[in-house]
Length: 319
Image (tube, rainbow, N blue to C red; front, side, top):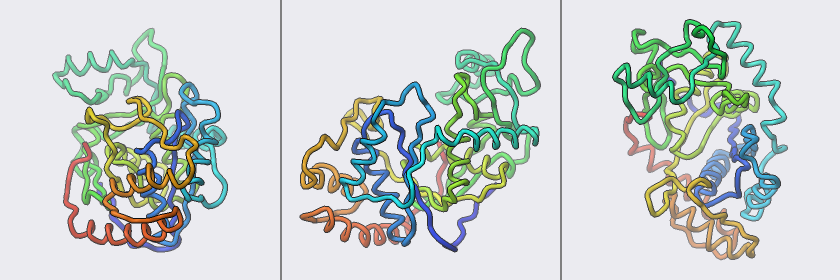
């Protein structure tokens, strides 16, 4: 299954979708900056969506801190900010649609049980590929924990199993859903909606045409394309920028101790300590003495970077 890259037709709608589990750090600023610049280059709209479905990890007040940080950096969104916790009726409707199509089933498996199954089947891997244990029904005495989406079986023809798409940074990317993912969770065992379903439903509902985000989500894209097709949603264009790593080579994140870039310092200090370093990480070597001058220089620089990138991207795997 190949997702073709269509030309830009109609209005461009991009988005930045942070989780309120901690303030923005340099890595999240890089993703925000790339998505903002891409919207500006294409004279489009830039939406902000707070992805707060994982209520156990949300930190009170962080959503407002995120929004304030974006504004202090000169990134103003279009329209109203949305919160995923206010949109659960959309996810319920999508699950019902998938259920009516026979595309989902309840699953009782724990993470350890999946790991044990992989070992028994000789499929030891760093990635948990679901072996389909509950696909034909729950075992006696087992209770449903999560809801999984059926993906093509390993015996299915390659065009049905392998999802390919064009990434505007990496070029052609392919993933074999059966071999590399298996049936995946769309409603978690704790009752929360899974990221894969929520992001697809939200992007479709908001009319998002272009998704610019970190390359850590590159291997999620084929699953999202597959869900979009099942739900009858249009497929956005994708661009995955490199992720910022810490000194140990780990992705910079709240879990790895990433520090907030906005500690209330004057905006001029944010320019030097956050905006210019984030731009340099993206390959934009800019000089600016104000936030306004920064964005005036950054937009054409991003356009030139993408033009050069179009000439150099080649095929790769999603994992």
